[in-house]
Length: 476
Ligand code: 5AD
Ligand code: SF4
Image (cartoon, rainbow, N blue to C red; front, top):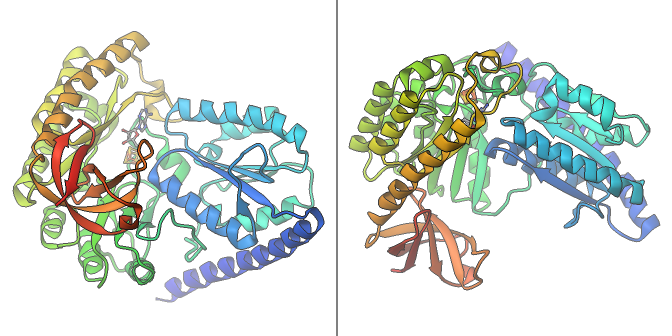
């Protein structure tokens, strides 16, 4: 109990300290505004997963509290911040490319401040490269000290050198940072940070640290506050939500957490990601069935259908176990849809292994699958494995995977034609101003004709046509 209190105090002290820096920055920015006759602006680029997107909502929250306004143009912004991903090599290459362009922008506007944070900067090789070739970057910080942005920005006013502040490991979780949400009716909520699984291909455990869960009361309080402000749907985020709560002083299972969140009055939908098959319990399946607010959808990454490859990947389940879980989910939860992640071309993958993956795709009937070409990440065990697969072989398998997958996705959506589903209306379609888009409970993307006053409401829509990756509906 005492330890918990001390932790709590450290968190509160850190938050208070950053609030002071936000205040100091506010004074500084308002002086600049008086001098220049315009508000100081920021441009925030986010790459990667929903976890990173949610981190960016906190970064934006801090920046706006300091008095920055969002800039639509990177070139004209006073402060440019890249919140980066490193899960695959091409994500990093894109950031280096954009940083190159920024050098040119900074020449035109020498007062521009540039910062980079997120998963990429947690790697020594990246830091070395930034130190050597990107000296014009002003601030570099990582995933564990994201909340220090106000302090770092303030410090960087005083120095011309690049400020590097990268922590090797996680410390306490700083709660209650100001946050800018993408809309008023949906919100992401972290329930845990880090990952302990060390899948052989994955860099995440090295850049996001060990698994740590937030206390249920902190999560409930946050969601309650969000609901009081109009939020209808929450997305609970963690690298492996199924192992939530194991390391808490008073352990709580993910199923128990879901049951508690389900009680929150006014909340209408609960989603979560990502589930690891090895930790998906019968207790969780039962909770999904019994909690009326938990959506009938699960993202359950398979990665490969071959037991040999799954073993090399360090995934701790077999194809048979995975298919058994899928069976249980389909039997227990009415009309559940299932999506997945698949990696093609893991070292040593043979044609026979790949056929096993195709077999799983055919058996499960996914509503969507995120398919990836294996990318070598230095520092991970897979990077030094023999039998790295030649590019042309991987590319051919990747294309064949999509050829099997896409008709299945279309079939799953075709089955929905004729049904009436409840859709949370999210936005006006980017292609057509008269069309709205939203999601059904089972995560199906629905397009239908409507006016933008419907955004944020949950309304019944009749599905009338299938377009493979989304469906067309009309007001029921
Ligand atoms: N190469 C390709 N895909 C990867 N993923 C993680 N690491 C790699 C890698 N090195 C994929 C996995 C994971 C998803 C978020 O990204 O499928 O589930
Ligand atoms: Fe990476 Fe595996 Fe952890 Fe997911 S569970 S973040 S794939 S190590």
